[in-house]
Amino acid sequence: MQQLVESLVRLLESYRGRDKVIRTVCYGSQLVGGVLTRKDETDTSSLQFGKSLLLFSAQLSHCRTVLRLFDDLSMLAYSHSYGLGASEQDTSIRWISVLNNVADQLYYPCEHIAWAADADLIKVKSDKWWLFSTVLWGTSLLLGILRSLRVLLLLKKKLKKYERDEGDSRHSQLRRQMRGELLSILSSMADLSNAIHWMPPGFLWAGRFPSWLVGLLGTISSLIGLTQMKTSESEQSDSTETSSQ
Image 1: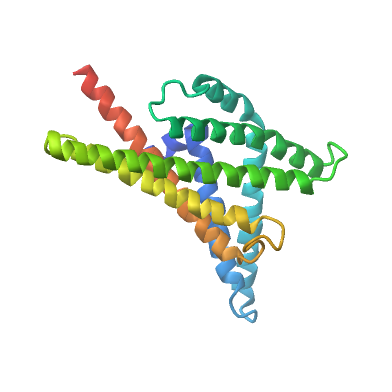
Image 2: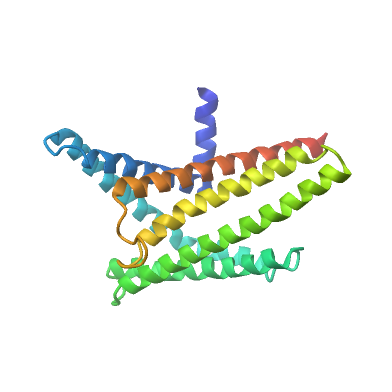
């Protein structure tokens, strides 16, 4: 129990970890709140609790929006370090990643303008800026899915090569990488479904998801993100210990 608490504290002490926890709680609250508000309205206690959870979820979402006001510089630093992806061996992955970085970089100022408009800090209509940010988010997710599919194809070729040339020496590592890419695809598809839901009515299934389904898809994506973050930290810790021995 103490180890679990210490792990949670370490997670909350980092900005990235705290954001993932807030995101998970946000969508989890929306999932439970959405389910409770669908029940018989005669059960007033459950209905009221469900509405409270939906309000709590909305406040957490707003909290994440405010925190993202400070993400532009870190995203710019990452985009600058990646550049045109000269270190990438595969051309497709290189240009997909570059376009992904462009979409991510443009997303932040669009969301900031939409937030500032809703807060009456600037005198513009926020609707079109929320639309721009949603389109950019969806574009980034779609590019991420394409990138993961390409990586999976390359990993599959590598796996066949090692089976033919070197036996089982790297099978477990490659399969672990493939599982990670599959989880990334599942996470991005869940988020992309929600992004389409938030598009203007008439576009695919825009506006048709009930609150509990939005919460369910977001919770799935968030839990995958937490799992991948934990796995990445464990692998980095293992590699550090190995190099120090």
